[in-house]
Image (cartoon, rainbow, N blue to C red):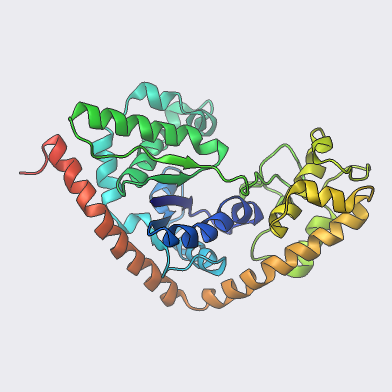
Length: 335
């Protein structure tokens, strides 16, 4: 079993990133290791180049992101943690796979349509071929499983299509078809200001999200001011189907407490958000405070964080090298 997943290097991580991905990564590194497998988690700094970036910010964000992952529980001794740019096999295999991927496939990518919008002619080529690099990211390690959210399932399906076509075109059995890992424990966390929008770093309102670096008072303030409604909580979670903000706060509580949303509404049934929000804030603070403390410590140790990334890149390079060599041989590049 080999699990591969990456995260964009776009600045401070928030509660949605932690509950939606990182918390599951932390659990996976132990579960997969117990089965004799590997977990590889990378910082997608090459993907960040598809849009405008300040080079100084990108470098700083890469270190900050690595520090945050370690603070949240990723152990570089258990998982392979590295930044993508330090393993050239990602880019090299991406170029080879661009001979296999088809324009029609990429044109159908929903995220390409969303991110390019009406200015497709002005979008970077990298933004268009982004899913091919994503395919290379997982295929170069012969990944068997890839943790994905609902919004990334299409890209993994593309990776499987590329792997199938490559294997068929060149008469090899090089790339296994990676399976998606969609955890029931990985909820989709929404904005604290708009229950219909995903919690995001790009939201102009800082009150829409809880950043992992926020102090206790700010966390409490953000939950206190989170949008809700005047109705009390029901005793059935399904009854919140049309109450997006209320459903989101219950989901957050359940994910933080490792409980089912149904058990949460049963506990707070009949109570209003005047009682629920402080309880949620207290729970969030208890979970996030040790992460914040460790992150502050690691911020003062950038050399140690970089050392972890260098070690991870060396391990990843060794794992990727045989696959890249086989791909080169398959297409005739090895002489």
